[in-house]
Image (cartoon, rainbow, N blue to C red; front, side, top):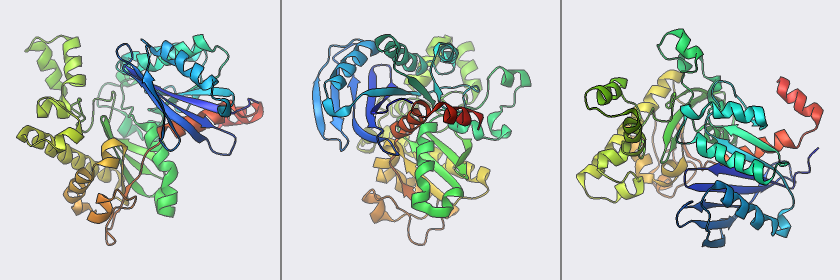
Length: 403
């Protein structure tokens, strides 16, 4: 049995490396510190905060890639005497395909399987894998665990997973996977503390941030979600369009002469709120921008998010609770209020005062639907799974695999 003093949680992006350190001496992982390397390959900075987000370190870091950032992080952690020994590392991995419906310990065979998913999430998977491979080189004996954003949605019924294409394409992996699963798993785990027995009812979670999606839950399990084969589908996002007629893509290639690479760049980096507003897709900037294009982008986001809530309520056959989370969902009262007003016909009523205070319960006392604002914690989910996989005895692990 591994001695679980600390678990390192990693979330690697194209030019960033987010991390958190958890102590696992108790029954639940306890956050010790968190931070990030921002601007890898350019003017990178290394920032660390304690569990209460008090700054511990903020300094330049001449690190060009994930491996150098990890080397710097491991050196810093090794000099913090009260953090103990590092027992394992857990990674947020965006795509697990249809093979992985739960977290797994990473070995050479698992790593080979994950490389096959790069075409399914080319903007995310290469960076997720870069961090895993770098840590294997720096600390070959350290157990590593992959936790998948797609795994939570494996519970969706066939009608939600399949597209209306010939069966052989489904067999080749073209299906609705859904994403943000670690966030939804966290919210589902804390809902009983807020809703009691009603947490097993008909719930819609709105994970609204730079990337945005919504998920319908029944009995705490995903039954429908807005993202699909890739993270491009669903509601509009900062730089991604959300739902789009596939004929638009073929038109751009056939009639406008765009290459596949150019279409990919357009849809991932220049669409969504940024495309509508003519530049910046950050909701904080758009809400304070007097230009009509900015206001139009906000209207578009509110409209299509409200429409998605109604669609998911239809899939559930009703609605008992609506939960807002992630950057916009947690921190933009104006967006929450507008969405709730647009979906009031579903029985959603908001308490303006509670909403403006960013309270947890923001529904009006007479609202038929509970309305909550809950901060998500994907890192805690990764830490919990990593602890479960690495720090159990062989018999317990075998039992878990057979469940």
